[in-house]
Length: 135
Image 1 (tube, rainbow, N blue to C red):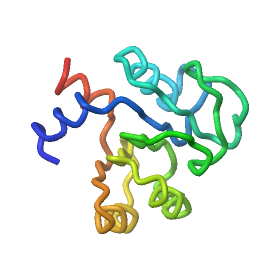
Image 2: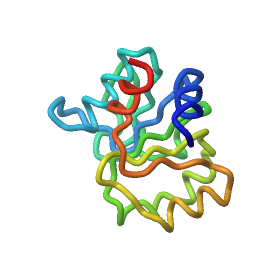
Image 3: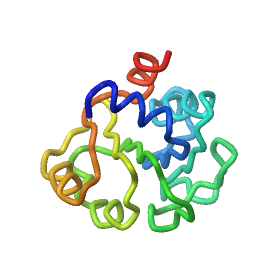
Image 4: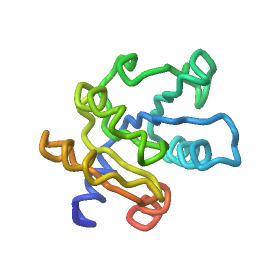
């Protein structure tokens, strides 16, 4: 996506699922989504280790398949080598955009999603890009 396309998408998006959400405020998997919550996005936390707990006012679910509403952005905080294990769930979820945080990239995973019509951003921090494009 070009910067203008990305800006328009971020302005229209409302729901962000956070795969790998974490309760520790010192971890990017907590403070990046917290920033997004402050900017008005609805967050849907996903992490089997914390299923049942509450983050950002929502109950954490263990799997993407447990999400009960459409997702505009799937923000992923998982190791690159773990991504293919989530591929089928992501394809069923059909988010408008998959965002792989800084340090996370997997060309095979991204290629499969893009072939299915799901755009992917790799190895970039959603918080940083949001600040750059939307202030």
